[in-house]
Amino acid sequence: MADSCATKYPILMLHGMGFRDGKFGYWGRIPDVLRAGGARVFHGGQDGNASIEYNAGIIAGAIDRILRETGAEKVNVIAHSKGGLETRYVISTMGYGDRIASLTTISTPHNGSVALSKIMKLPKPLRALIYIGAKITDFFHLISGDKKPDTYTCIRQLTREYMAEFGRDNPADDRVLYRSCAFVMKNALSDGIMTFPYLGVKALNTQSDGFLTPEEVRYGEFLGTFTGTGRRGISHCDEVDLRRRRLSRKKPQDEHHISDITDFYIRLVSELKERGL
Image (cartoon, rainbow, N blue to C red; front, side, top):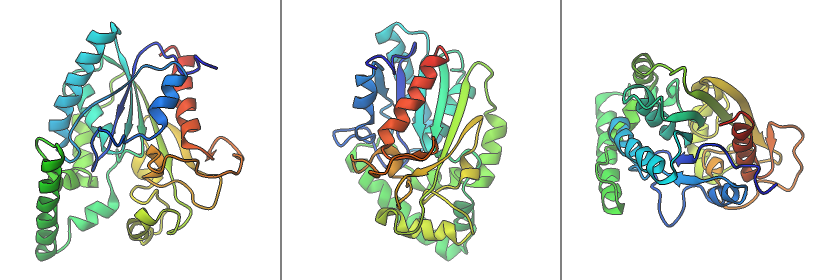
């Protein structure tokens, strides 16, 4: 239906770490598909590799702008990966719980990454190499448009230790509907981009989307763990339609199997509409 995604409040889509909103389009076909269903879709414009706190300030400004432009009282946020943490900071620390109706997170490390915790506990010489690599990454993000890249801080902020403290400082707000989703690849060859990180997480004897496990992303109303209908499963990149095409031609066996990631987002937004949001 043409109005299946026509929610009461506008949709704010927030990217994760490593990318920016721009011509390439972090979310692939997803925003256009939602707009075709009647949704009003906006983007946050935050840095790719800045700290949670810095990006939260940009997102708060984006929310204020959207509310002025649309006349809406609130927004529904759909956030991928680290973008979900930045939104939680906006809600709790910055006091925006009265302006955010819902937060739906896609593979957001609410409970911290075990793999990153182990990396940050490596011997000092190895951590020094990580720090140097992070600074090199900061340079490339700076020339690509980031105002305050800080990759090393980003990595540290995704660890289990940091997220335990973050959770205490940023509790859920009763006025906001929190939903979370997890995804898994089916094997190391599901996505060539994610092969090596997938193997690293797999060494911990658990499934993941190449970065994060279902246990690490569970928060609020958990919608479940999703995978593809074909042999690949769904990777951290597939979750935001990086390849701009269907995942598989096979029909879904049930609601937790997905053949086209755009169908999943239509379902997410349609459910918000059904709940009066």
